[in-house]
Length: 94
Image (tube, rainbow, N blue to C red; front, side, top):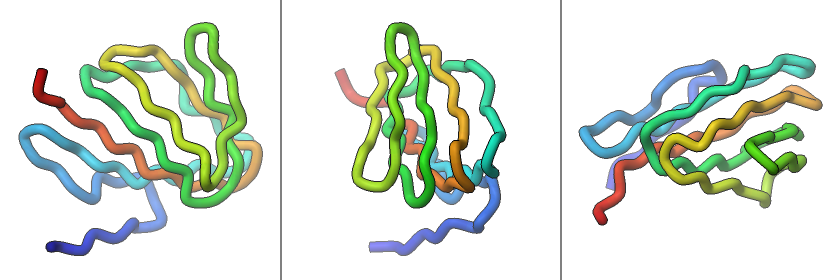
C-alpha cells in the first residue's frame, strides 16, 4: 500500500502506464472548458459544488456524488463554490 495526497492545486498525484490521478482545484466561478480524454474517467468531488456537463447531461456534483465516463466523452466543469475533485483516468482491460 502507498499513500498519495492532494497538493491543494492542480497536479497529477499518481501516474502509471494505465492510470493517472489528478487533484483538481477549481476556484468559485472558474470553468474548465469542454474537453475529452482517451481514458475511462471517474470524477470524485472532495469539497465544493460543481456543475458537470456533458452531451445530454448536466448535473450538480458535490462530495458523495461521483461521475463515471467512457473514453472520449466530451465534458466541462463549472465551480459554483471553491471546489476540489480527484479525477481518476484509467485504461481498463477489455
